[in-house]
Image (cartoon, rainbow, N blue to C red; front, side, top):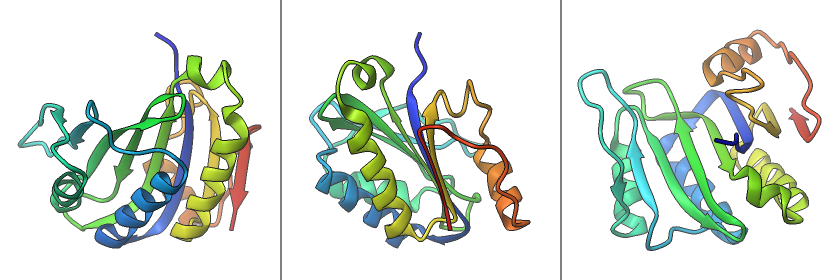
Length: 171
């Protein structure tokens, strides 16, 4: 299985999930990444519950469920090159968004001219969410070892460790 190209938008102090997830969803839509008939919602594990992926009945109810869930989760969207998974992270039970990870399929990414469009998407999300750091790379989590929790801790200390060749925005 191939690794995705990923964008991580990191907001160490967090934003209210209600506002930030809706902003993110709006920007995604403006960039041609939308909920489709085969989109899935995956609510995050809570320790007490490990929800199974479920079809997205409609955007509004999927966003409401995601925002209300104590560990947030992810939605699979349809993008111009194929499915795009957007994962929303935050501290459990605090209704805060501290990181968004956008994952695009490697095959689709490499066989198209998607890089400039995803760089623009990353820059727009960075600005819209007031992120401290936004990075993009192939296999960001699995191959590059990026952990949203560890990156948030470093940024809270004022540390910008590592460099990412596809994109590395800092504020």
